[in-house]
Image (cartoon, rainbow over all chains, first blue to last red; front, side, top):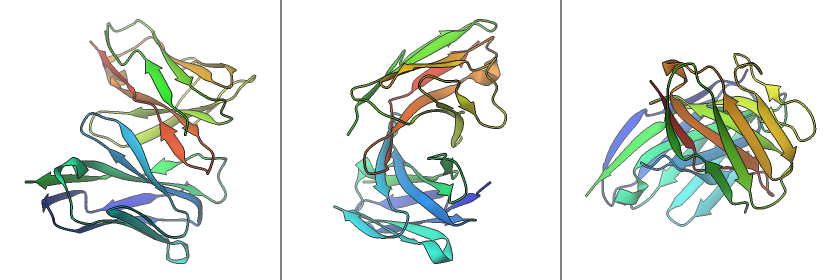
Length: 111
Length: 113
C-alpha cells in the first residue's frame, strides 16, 4: 500500500514564527488531507488537497501531485496551534477513502 | 458539515470483557469508518462500516475481535471483544462529508487493565 512520511517529527516554535511541515507519499493519490490533533485528542480536518494550493487564515497547503509531496504552512504561529499534524493519503488504486496516515509532526508553540 | 458524537468518551475495562462504542452522526452519510490510535502513535483504519452489509476489515483486523454494526445511515457501533491491555487506545469514528473531506468524532479513550 501507499507509504506516507512526514517531517520533521517534532518541531518547537516561538510564538509568532512561521513553519513548514512536509508530507511525502509513495504513490499517486486521489485524496490528500491534513489534520490537526489538539492536545485533548480531537482531530480537525484542515484541508482536503489532492493537488494545488489552498489557504485558510494563517494556514495554507500545497500539494504537488506529480512530485508526490504536500506542504503545510503555518504563519504567525500561536500557542493554540500546538498539537500533532497528520497528513493522510489514499492512493489512486485503493478503495474509497481508505486513508493511510503518516506518523505526524508534533508541534509545540511556546509563548 | 456533519456533527459526530461518540459514546462513551472514555472507559476503563477489565481484560477479557467487551466494550461497545457508539457513533452517531447528525445527518445521513454514505461512508463511515472506524480507526484506532494506539498511545503516541498514528491512526490505523480498522474497517469501513457498510450500511446493510458486513463491514470491510483492513489487514490485521478481524470481525470476531472488532464486530461492527451499521443499521442505518446515521449510526454505527464498534465492539472491542475479549479485551487485553494491548487494546488500550483511542477509537475514532469518521465519516466522509460532502466535498470529500473526512471528519472525525471526538474519540473513545479505552484503558484495559
